[in-house]
Length: 280
Image 1 (cartoon, rainbow, N blue to C red):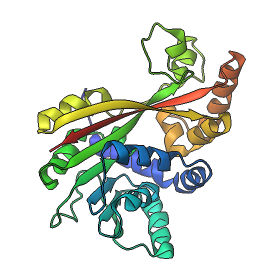
Image 2 (cartoon, rainbow, N blue to C red; image 1 turned 180 degrees about the vertical axis):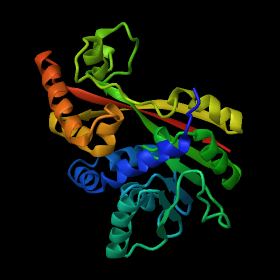
Image 3 (cartoon, rainbow, N blue to C red; image 1 turned 30 degrees about the vertical axis):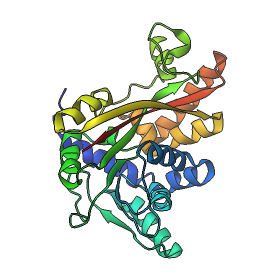
Image 4 (cartoon, helix red, strand yellow; image 1 turned 90 degrees about the vertical axis):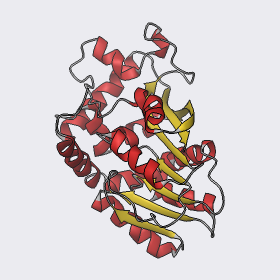
């Protein structure tokens, strides 16, 4: 179903991430989740020394710094984000570290293009593609900018589960997405969420645009209770669960939700992150 007002969604997402910069950064410093996600995405995309890479939705720069390690001194990374507060942290960290061949630019996902005169080897959307209301626009942009035999890659949060195996069916209790358990029980604090885009359509969308050799998979990430609570306490993450409530209300709902899961003897938490890769 098409988004009626993509511009309004962009503004909401931008505001949520502007309000998330400090908490996002402190979360990442403690747990390293987004470093891990970037590393795994770079591996499946086979990012190599000397490559020029766009990092779309780079946030505070965590993913871009990881990618810089992959491309080395002969490669180039451009981190792109439209959150001024997130980019400020990334740029300050860049200045402090003095890393060459790494830059950050403010742009939304549909209008990037600073490296147009370079041979672009890969464009990655690390934990960002599912926040883009019109993914076809940005993926068409990526296809235009990439040279032949280059790679587009993305990952996206599927949900939170209580087993570390791939979900096998909605009828299987142990494989139900945990937030759905509260919803099915009619709890007033159950997340009602907001689907900005349909990530299940990504492989077909890449094929439609012209990408080939499309591969998909699922990465399972185990979270402690503290890490899970910290992740969903970030304004941008809690807004994805309860988009119409204030941040303070969302934090109260999160406490009630976690208490509910513990009451049901659910003490292990696994995020499933899907990934999708295509070649031009």
